[in-house]
Length: 465
Image (cartoon, rainbow, N blue to C red; front, side, top):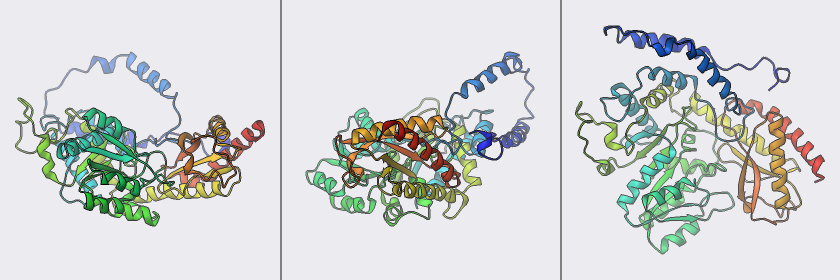
């Protein structure tokens, strides 16, 4: 962004560095009784600053994920307190596998995941952090496979691709269930498959990563009661929206019943303001901990308390991730109506405003009204092939103007092509996609729209469409 386009010059947040220094001194005071060590030669070397400055220069070769003009993929920086707390923990570098390696950070992890569980209405459960949503979903499907050996895993065609990959790793059969035109699992198609038997686990996607669609959880719960499968909620992206007060009725109804599933995955490193990697897996029945039971000749003897490695497939895990999450939730509690929840609501408001503008503009064709904070649309053209080409060119043109969007390949059925006079000469459409996950996006929609408007006019003028 040029300084002439917006008042003030952009600056990265640096106030937290001052507070971090005070926190490091507080940490240091707790170890003041130890014998002094010689100064590290590595930290005093002349090349230290040179290397770090070189790293900073290399990191400039990135999109501005921290800025509202980045409105593409689900990427954003962690909250300053998460960043500072993570850095603070690095002076200790705790390992949250066994209590030997991370007493304080293990306790902080247990407190943090308990608050996440309460967000879903669970006071008692088995839960821990993971390296991310992939590992968290792997653990959930691993437990499901142990409970329903030989049975298939079913997820929607818009579920994250990791479920099919994980099922293959675990030796579980995977089946894809069609979606409706709103990107949600087709409950009728699922029931048709359930009638044939052999399905042990159904994955409900609570916010697909392509469109933010929320599977019809109340209906899936009803099917679970009839067919007896295990129901897993992949809420890696959308889970925190359980706190949002501005969801449409169907999404609200789905999130209101998320506590009735058997397991939940949520990613604090997506909407939870955390650094990568920080995922969480939660099991409603703590008894599934029996599947994790294992022997270790040297790690679990420092305390009779539960070691997190005893309820996790991962071994060494960064205690810093737990410290960062704990600190963030202390500052921004996971409560409806609180500052954290208002940030979620701002992103959804931004998505609704952008969608309305697109729907009112004859140059574009929108998909369905966003359920969370992801908007998808395609340029109007003679056919799906031409629309896909225009989308790619607009994507490039907006990037030249410092507005960064994303592209997605979606089923043509998600768009009313016939109503828009677009020939369906392709089953899929390459469309434009925007994830408006920064609270600031709400106030920046006019600026984003101006850049999209200019870029679209430039591309259309050159194409003759």
